[in-house]
Length: 172
Image (cartoon, rainbow, N blue to C red; front, side):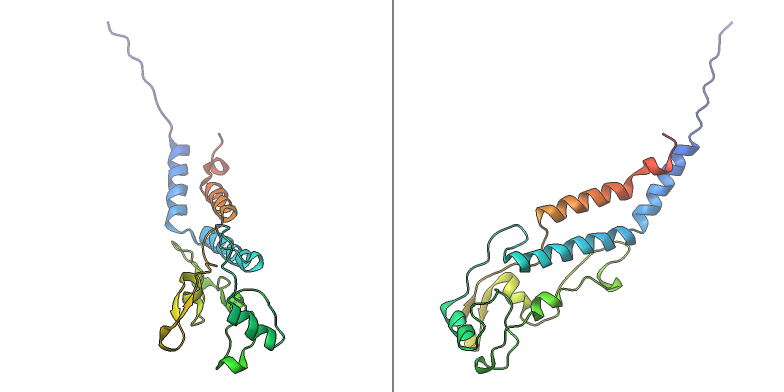
């Protein structure tokens, strides 16, 4: 005679955890909203510290820019806080670029994306650097303000782990 051992596995809890994980990975809107916030915070910090998100100091203002700002009573002012002008004689120091970084609307995140950006025409040249001005004779150095700081990366990692934490849904 052969002895039989019967093992029954009740995996309802495991199946429920996988179902929840599937649901969370299908619609990550809330996580993406949080990530967008961290990205916006990193950009705001870049303007405040005048450094790239990865903590590289921005290139100093040119002599010409410093002189133009001094002439208008805005010397020297913060970097990237200028550019709202129609001609050099009407140079105004503003915070338009910093204020233009978008992250506060549902259009900047969704079920599977998080993004920030700027709608001002000169944002790209300041982020990446390049030639500008008449006949592209002026070289604008890159002063990156969009990107992820190490603090933002850590916060995103923590939020993602919390988002996927299935311990909240199981008895274990």
